[in-house]
Length: 339
Ligand code: FAQ
Image (cartoon, rainbow, N blue to C red; front, side, top):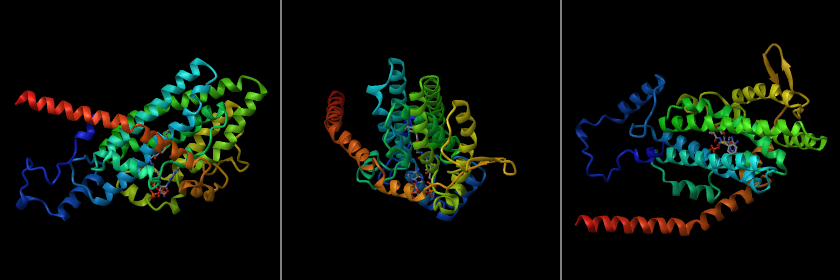
């Protein structure tokens, strides 16, 4: 995975690449070959020709996904120093570190499309790029950390498993490893909640309160309803998205209700009930106004999250400068030795 950033299509300036203009296929042939590959459920790799709109859609989705992983470290990272035991602290540090790794695989996958990491980060830091709405809510107590693992990672896995079959090779391959790790994250969250539910009435109340605050946000995380999702039809046609926002949301509800029963918490939705004819759970209305306000920068923690990321970037400038200066000196030394 880490080597994929090196696997880029040749740049037009690269004179080592011989281009046979008279034998080059025209745009229509390239498009037809791409369409055939997509129709046959094949993979598109970085060196392959692809329509600009496909490339742009992938950069948008993969970079947003990478930003979500990196910003997603903040709500839980906030609890590392206050974890209730050494065991929980170790697990949480490992989980937050995994999220950093996911961000790095994803930035690498997006770089294979010809967009630099600096460009992607500049878009995040200026507020132009999106990241998942879910990370703009506060973590008020330790139960929130368990609920993020159970529900947020649970929702993330539901959305990401189909991305392992995405038509773009580097993204699909990154997702295989990400999903394995997310599965551990989901289980550690559920297990932390199970042990709280074996505790005092106060601990039960903390878990129930956290579930009440996160449930609807997790349902919204899957994105707008299918009939209001501008990117879905084309994303499905290109094999980037395999299952629609609403279908994934339904799968998440169906999988989570029995887990909530086992845990002993109530999901905060009076309309939640099994529908025998649909063979699915019905659920109540999601507050889309709140979702869009959060996506557009006006959630409870948007400003704080972005300010933290910008500060981290600025504070790390000296290290990037030092690494570049070291690399320059080393290549100078190698050239001198070779001369
Ligand atoms: N938040 O037309 P659609 C995680 C935007 S990773 C913010 O349906 P699309 C791991 C969407 O971008 C969580 N914006 O778009 C973890 C679009 O805006 P644009 C992140 C959202 O792309 C766990 C507009 O609304 N996962 O949690 C959201 O077809 C714990 C219209 O929407 C991914 O990124 C939202 N929730 O479908 C880390 C997975 N939903 O770009 C730490 C990859 C929609 O046109 C701790 N991404 N929007 O300006 C995807 O699967 C898709 O991009 C969707 C959206 C499903 C998110």
